[in-house]
Amino acid sequence: PDGTDPLRLTTGQGIDERPDWAPDSSRIAFSRNGNIWAMDADGTDPARLKKTPRQEFAPAYSPNGKRITFNRMSKDGRISTWIMRTDGSKPKRLTFGRLDFFPDWQPQ
Image 1 (spheres, helix red, strand yellow):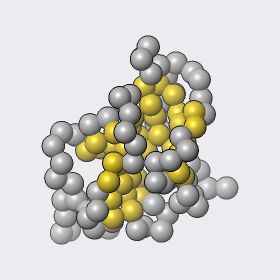
Image 2 (spheres, rainbow, N blue to C red):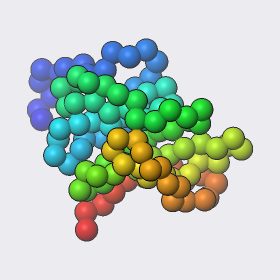
Image 3 (cartoon, rainbow, N blue to C red):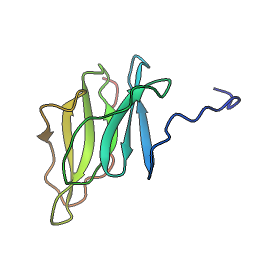
Image 4 (spheres, rainbow, N blue to C red):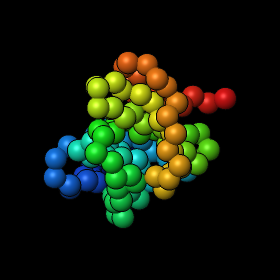
């Protein structure tokens, strides 16, 4: 917490961004080159959660750790908010606006 002893967790090619910790601190979801990934908190076991030609970014875990919300860009450039299970299954579109950026969960 004080910023000492930083440890690099990702070594993939391209851009890794917008990390989000799972509520139990066991996993970290992040965006890598337009795809949603997750890895163990120590940087091991990285896995792409979804495979789609669409740009996806800004993952955020739900407070109970069972879902991840994220943004997806459509062919026409619209950015909407989606939700899926933490294994990448059951994606569902939540918003239908033009630019719905950076979803996040709030405590109840």
